[in-house]
Image (cartoon, rainbow, N blue to C red):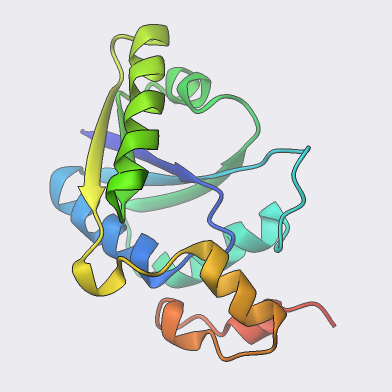
Length: 157
């Protein structure tokens, strides 16, 4: 069974992320969406909420799992025995950064391959940063969130 990890902060999970996931599911039997948590960064949604949002968005997909982690992504791959990392790309700037990370990961774990999947053109402008900004300012972010997820249910107070 070909399994891949799709890591990210997913703060929040957007339709762009979902688009990359759909493409990844055409290549892999199973995809583990891994919500990275960095204790030195303040996220908009806490890691458990991010996991809940992703589970709500992907609950109908039997070949998707969701977890959170705090170690290096490459260490998570080794711990789970996963040989593929999926990274979504929106722009050439994303590619430049992700390429450097992929090379470092390859050096640390030669058996793990990074697969780059471009988001569909209609999603290339959507980033978690943009969605957070809409949410912070009280805007309607529903058009940027996967169907079936009411982001307002996860908003604080």
